[in-house]
Image 1 (cartoon, one colour):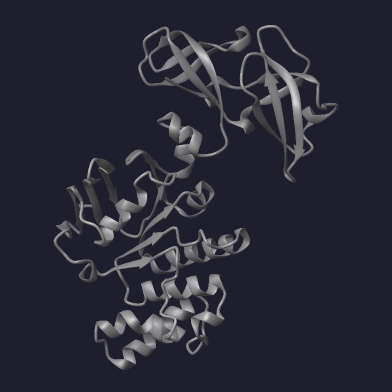
Image 2: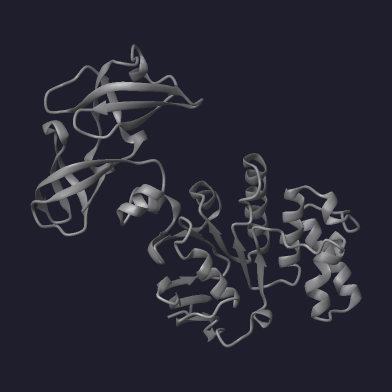
Length: 358
């Protein structure tokens, strides 16, 4: 069996009585782009800081190429780091900022000049060597920070919410650049964000953090199509949740009774599979079809709002005895003809596209 390039094994971190991280375990392949995704306080940044050597774990181990790095000081781990705040030296030029990691490693001047030039070309800042950081935009400063982290060819690059201070358009531009740089260099990247769209845009795989633990690891499509927990289902993509009664179960599937008496069979059920009790049914807005009028035995409701969003139309339907349901239809969809606020409609969906959680 091949040894993982980077292995995180049962990492835990406590601060007094508070547990910030508990039993975080994963393997990262060489050259992989792995994102730690989760809300504030979920343990993702703490895990990253332990990897960087800025914090000591309360338990567990981290192996790089099969060897533990926990006893190695942060400055000797040879791991690149990019922070939310650019942390550039304001009194040094762009070139000197990028050269700093090489100078403290006492690299020859000719090598420093060549590597700085190559790193700035990689982030598309050729000719900016003499510019001072204060005279650059936020996006340019973050590119300089990225060049500085990559200039000494670290085997692993850690990035802690590096784009959260940028506006949406600039954030998307730098996301594209980070993806391009990853593809060109093949460096292994561990990236922390609370932005699901950013995680989906950048990552090979995503580790979803919740309350100090990893709920699920997978590709974006895997997390979206087959969420393992209700938290993942609600955090990845747009979601509707409907409370339902469990009528019966058959293996991993359930027969559910929805508000208004609608019965749905063949719904994948996560959690205990015993009959009876309640479940929360996940419905993705784009998986719901609408028909004018209400029909017996179907999930019906009244249209409360219709919003044009360019490529799609967002519709809010209020069913009887349940929370409002969001529906998204492509612009120009035939089902939109004649629909207006106040109209009664029937919602239909394929049970295989849904998930139920205890």
